[in-house]
Amino acid sequence: MARASPLVIIFLVLGSSIATYNLVTMVIHYGSSERVAIDDKTLFVDPITEMPAHVKNRKRPKATFHVALTATDAIYSKWQCRIMYYWYKRQKNLPGSEMGGFTRILHSGRPDNLMDEIPTLVVDPLPEGRDRGYIVLNRPWAFVQWLEKATIEEEYVLMAEPDHIFLRPLPNLAHLGLPAAFPFSYIQPEKHEKIIRKYYPEEYGPVKDVDPIGNSPVIIRKDLIAKIAPTWMNVSLKMKYDPETDKAFGWVLEMYAYAVASALHGVRHILWKDFMLQPPWDLETTNKYILHYTYGCDYNLKGELTYGTIGEWRFDKRSHGAGPMPRNLSLPPPGVPESVVTLVKMVNEATANIPNWDTL
Ligand SMILES: *[C@@H]1O[C@H](CO)[C@@H](O)[C@H](O)[C@H]1NC(C)=O
Ligand SMILES: *[C@@H]1O[C@H](CO)[C@@H](O)[C@H](O)[C@H]1NC(C)=O
Image (tube, rainbow, N blue to C red; front, side, top):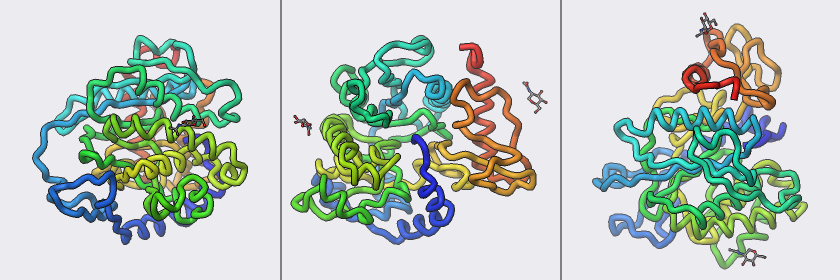
């Protein structure tokens, strides 16, 4: 993600455990989504406690997905992409993985110096000024172009971001027409009913059918994302150009746009809490698949979180906008959660092994 607004940070500090708890008690009815019959039953899924055993233990042929990473040619994006691709390669061929090919979709309109290191497709940015300075609006347009131009061998696609690290081999968490997504505690369509209704008219269904998600991470069948992406782009632009929506959604506008666009196509997502974790709020990597290092991790030397205040020990991707994260970062002081320790170790492993890390 781009920047976190102070409001969102306050919410996360005070409210993340409460919000997660509320989601635990929520049961979503998937029977209506895409009219996909699963084992000929109406499927009720508790999105947080995983899929039902009869779905989870299904015997099915391997279903690989293509990893699609949208990126720019900024140094900040590049060093994150290099770490991301390193861990993709490390996990891809391990047992349990259904990871297929990889494409960095570079939406800067011209090749950069990572073309030989990472499989890349160059696509156009939005016309000058259309993004109104909100660079991530380029993501839907990038996906539209990629899906039109590329021959994708895999049946499924994972939409990923540069600050994602694969913690373990990732299986295909989608099931047929049901894509898999991560439920974000701060995406709350029902709280913004009036705004959502501007884009999701009543005849499409209740606002609760808009999933609490963004486009990433999502594993989705390629034909479905090909339908959703153009709508996602249109909805993003409409939202950005509407002052009320722009103000309400801020830095997560393009996430809401994906949630609405998929709902407009009748596509509901399986919500996997274990799909991703976000240090420093999530403490353990156990059973999680993707580590998302979007939030700064600041601690004092006693190992206490000092979020919002620069810590005596810190890990923050935003401190490295002008050059790559240094190699061999010091490990956090004792008492810091395992998720943060794992993050530093994995970043260190990647940067130690990527040739020309600090000279490229
Ligand atoms: C997107 O918007 C354009 C211009 O308003 C329109 O021509 C096009 O049909 C829309 N496409 C989708 C998929 O909504
Ligand atoms: C990494 O840093 C530690 C001190 O924090 C040092 O002892 C070690 O030799 C360094 N390793 C490399 C490979 O530079």
